[in-house]
Length: 105
Image (cartoon, rainbow, N blue to C red; front, top):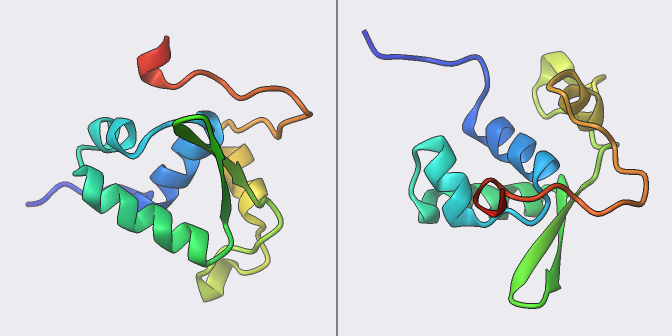
């Protein structure tokens, strides 16, 4: 029997971005057990759907979550993505710099 999880790869990616706004695709891939290329595809899909914004900072990228967009599944459209992320422990930013990425600790 294959192993399964309750949270999709898109949700895990979004939660990592929420927790570590300057995380790289390589760091996310390592954390999630995915290739960097697979993570970049997920990030591109989240960006295209408006769930995240990207801003170049130096040689890296800072991600920002758009917390007001509803979840995509028909059964949960009344739930904003920010509320979902808060249930996973995300603290909405209040004008402070994001946490360090796992490799910066």
